[in-house]
Image 1 (cartoon, rainbow, N blue to C red):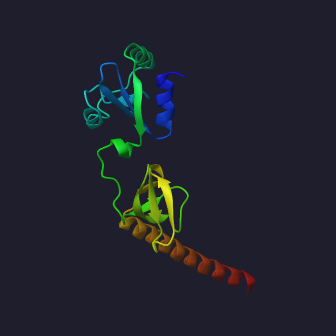
Image 2 (image 1 turned 180 degrees about the horizontal axis):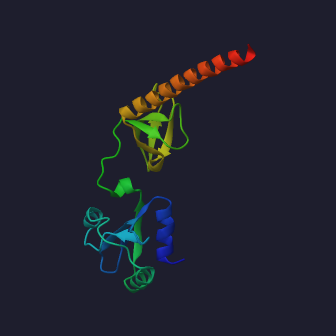
Amino acid sequence: MNLRQKLDIIHNVGRWTMLTNDDGEFCLFSTRDNGGDLRDSGWWKTKKEAIECQRGFCGYLPEDFDYYAKEENWRIVRTGTPEEFDKVEGYKEGQKVRITENTIGNGFGFIEERYKDNWRVSNENKDDWHTFPASAIEPYFEDEQEEEMVEVKTFKSTLKTALEELKKKVIKIIK
């Protein structure tokens, strides 16, 4: 398996990859460009510079990637989640989040802490918690619940009205 194939596998499980070369430079491969190739940061003297410039360039064509990887002896330094490399703060303790996979309770929870590459999320009473990958949670906004409740109330109201109309028609048919 060549390096490009390894990077594809790493990317497909939601991780980014930092590479180094024989010149001691670093390059971060992160997202895909619109051609489907892994986007890179360009080659920099420090890991920090590579991270700061992530998503800065389009990806290498497969044949170019394979050529330079071999010619310049590219090697994997480390892999990590986008949150580990990206310049984001992440979730704050107590922040309400929507759980998109393996829901607990009503599909919402509260951030307890970061746990390795994952987030520990508790229920509202904080008496039960689960650990989720970053891909399984997303920010929650209070107005989302209000919109959902309005839709449910409207549906209940419409359903009630429809049942009343149906009841009147059934009574007429029976008479």
